[in-house]
Length: 492
Ligand code: GLN
Image (cartoon, rainbow, N blue to C red; front, side, top):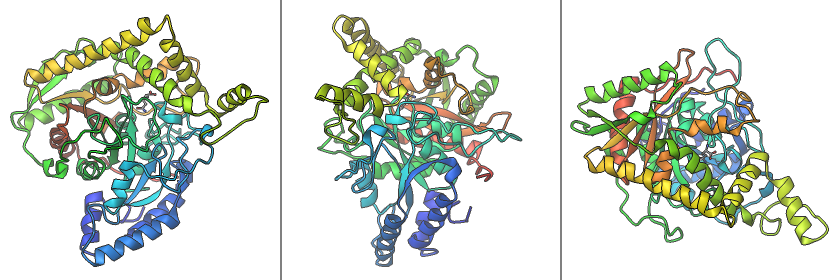
């Protein structure tokens, strides 16, 4: 790892402005790190030529003093984001070598602000998963290993390529998408920061759709400040996404270091789940103490419908997915497998193009939307969703500014350890994160410590709608107390 790959994004930005090093130099350092990172399988497409070209243009702008807020910053892009002229697959065979003729709004805003693209990052197929094991490109490996062990661990999912790449110093930051936890859970598993903004804060245009009422883009980076910097560039109104909100984008970085004195932090009793490891319970307690020491007030709260969030999510998300994925028919995009007549072609294309987890979701989704079952499952799940949202509304109306929870019920687990025979085992990983998507709220995961085996653990802060600034201020307190998580030892 060279010094240039180990900088924070803010340090790199400042060094580039001060001309301590050039965009070309920091980009070359990252291209070299990526080239050595094959065992991690984080990048599924490297774009070094494009990166060099973008860095060269950045150096020209920096020389003229015209650099944007992210000028010359090398980033990795989750393969759920359409990138113009660069293959985008959502890590599914069904998209084959689909090459978009357009750029997603979020990535185009990053390039507008001067960022440099290193390549496309691996993820669970169509972002369905919690371990990055469902990708058509194979699983991603977490750069972290338990102390004294050589066993490969999952990097979390679905944004496992993003989390692994940021933690392993293969980019200064990365994009992610979060439908049920796919930014926060992988951030926690790899010792980095990830934030899912309020639904509507970032445009979904040009992002491969999974569950449209839950999907939201957000950044990964190694410090809270770095995610604040990235999020400002990623946010904003987009007329091409009718769910994006027309509200000014604050200077999120200005919230870093802001006092949290007097902020009321809710601790939900329903998140004390049976069988939660003591290390997670201890970390949560530690988080409360850190925030209290910084002047926040800790209050016990109740979110009574929490236990229904996971089952309701696993109805709503597959329902929307089954509808969104209907477009992959062998006609409009990517792969086609002939089958005699048109029905045979659809069947063969979808049968061969989708992986097992995606098929499972399409079947569940189609089932819960079908006549006779719609009211019993889908409509009920939507009602539960409203109740979950109302739980949070009540808590926030009582004066609570943010809610503190663990991000995950465990540290990163071994590849293949969650049984394929029982998918619910994997779904249980999302227990603390899905409520946030169901309620459309912002949530951040900040590294807060390590398990006894030396694996990273994260704490989650959930905020009021569009109050990401409080999350950055509170997240910074946790980061200051816990210390920025160290780099993993390089074994790859
Ligand atoms: N693990 C969850 C799922 O598989 C969340 C995925 C996501 O946020 N994209 O649905």
